[in-house]
Image (tube, rainbow, N blue to C red; front, top):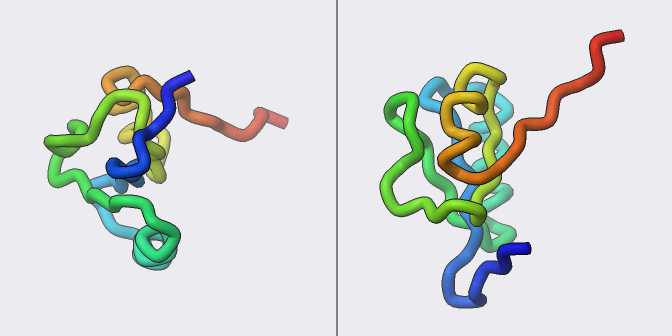
Length: 79
C-alpha cells in the first residue's frame, strides 16, 4: 500500500468541466488538508503522483486518468 509522506498531501483531481458538486467538494477537501487540482484537459495535471490521488469525475474522465494515477474508478451496480 502506498502511503503519503506527511509533507506531501494527497491530491483530489477534478475533471475539466466544473459541476456544482465539485465546486463544493474542492474547498471541503482543501480544508481537510488535501491538495486540489482541476485538470484543464483529459489528462492528469502535472505534479500529481501516481497512487496518491483521489478522482472526482464522471466515468469518461475517470477512465481517462485512472490508469496513470493508479486508481480504480468505483461505479454503482447496474440494477
